[in-house]
Image 1 (tube, rainbow, N blue to C red):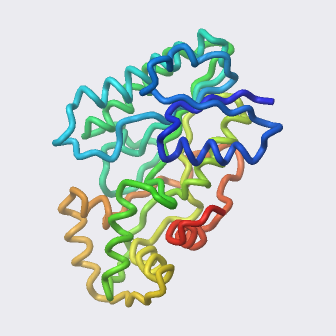
Image 2 (image 1 turned 90 degrees about the vertical axis):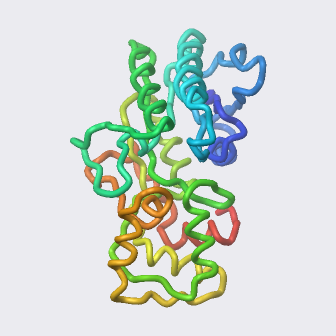
Length: 285
């Protein structure tokens, strides 16, 4: 049995991962801790694998003290890994982000430079560097850089798309594509990394890119509505995406190259349309 500690027990992905690993009670002994607990440092041992999911995310940066990003996303992650290593853990899994590339649109591949533009992305990248400095024989660091994560009750940009889809009668048909991952597909990817036991950098994403207009239509369909996809207005969506900000994040094309490794094994258990239905229905698969 592998002893697994989830750091970030109250986070969205942390709650889903706890339930996911709970499907194999004879295979994983799962513990959880929140960095808000005063005694979290004393609870970092003994574990075989520690999964760091705690972080400052989904905030308006202009309304947030920049130091908070570095204190939580970088410094506390490093301290958690250092304590885990001292306590005998063999593996530390860190949930990073696509934001370390600093891109709003485009294709990210093996040679894409790491140029984050937000405090969130900068703090995640800084944490990655510190964590890799802790690696040694018997202690491996695995970094996951997922794209947009969505699922029932998620935060971030997906709910913005869903709100639009529930109310708009039509939407431009255009070629906007996004790498995204359904939360339980991500949990399975994390489980496979735990089983593999090693380090490395992974880029988990759902098997097919999400076409933004089709995604909007699927969301509407899940709520019993039919959304018309109108040809000839792709220029409008492209122009709005180029403005950056929230519109760019929601409407623009941003994908990971398929050559990037997703996980040490097959982790997509639901296809794109099924994932949207599960999300909008609020069901657990």
